[in-house]
Length: 179
Picture 1 (cartoon, rainbow, N blue to C red):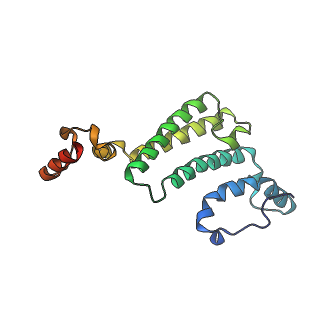
Picture 2 (cartoon, one colour; picture 1 turned 180 degrees about the vertical axis):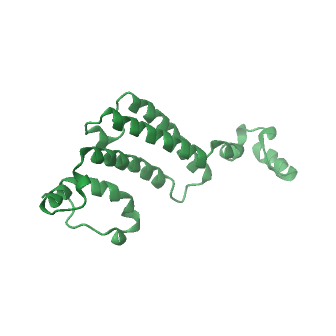
Picture 3 (cartoon, rainbow, N blue to C red; picture 1 turned 60 degrees about the vertical axis):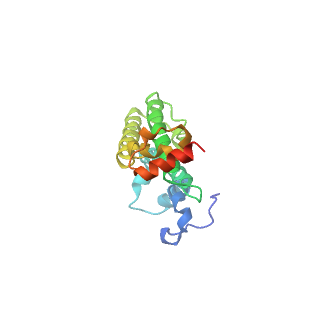
């Protein structure tokens, strides 16, 4: 067995920052797991099912995208406006990916693209992407942040676009905008 990992780490012993890679590590150890399970009589026979591995490959690919989004929203320069932009971009990408997957193109899901995917699993993938898009829109509505676009570019906003500012703040905004 030529695995990249010298030993398996229990989940509780995994460092906090590397926990996002658990699915990828598990998926990469697929062959070794199957060898171990064939040597021993195990209750995990479902690990020999190709359909189960195809679903796991999609889940792994999806978590890679989610982890990338999560990592991009961390750091000193990050704020609610930039994070909201990244979330809205991710939601748009989900819509795009759903359209592409409907055309039997899984290139944006690298592990899943390497496997044979039947119509049933393809429908499940499209449904999962659509559900994630709905949930992301529910938990991160874009209209809440539009009121604060003046923070991004205060020189291209009119006073009438400002919401929830006091009269003194609006007056100060006029001074800043025209300086």
